[in-house]
Image (cartoon, rainbow, N blue to C red; front, top):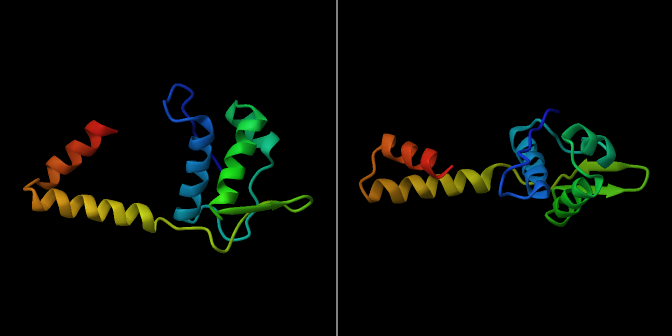
Length: 115
């Protein structure tokens, strides 16, 4: 498991960590019941405070992506979402852009510009 976060990003570190986990679940890098690293270990690897990782894990628990219990660790739940929400949003973007006359290259360019 090798995740990157950007300390200079406007996106909070907590959200970046949560996004890494969501993406790993959606791509199959993390599977149902797989254990995530302990907060202290992940914090050291990413160079962030342990509480930042814990906050990300709590957020993911609220989203039903992970579950954690003492002695069992943080594990991916069976109800963890896949990439479906992102794929759906991208499909909607493509549909709207095409209806408005954008070419494939223009859609790519717009996405690159906004990223």
